[in-house]
Length: 109
Image (cartoon, rainbow, N blue to C red):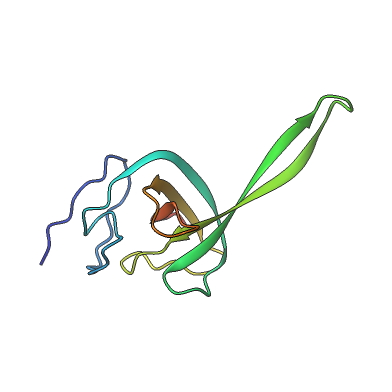
């Protein structure tokens, strides 16, 4: 049984054990940089989720705001295992593949 480690961010450590080499809690993966909260819109790929982050952008000419969204691909560790429509917290890490630079660290609801 591996020892659970803290990753430098205040959040709940998952009770479930995993042998994932890309898990920040049960392996040597270090997290750093940006932290986002968003909604999972797809979890069809193996150990990967797509997260949508809504934001607003100000248009100076019209003095109005417009809605925009950002989609980020993140690694989904076995110990967290989020599904579609979950609200999650993701943290930046080293590049895990061609398009994955983030890892899911917490399921909010």
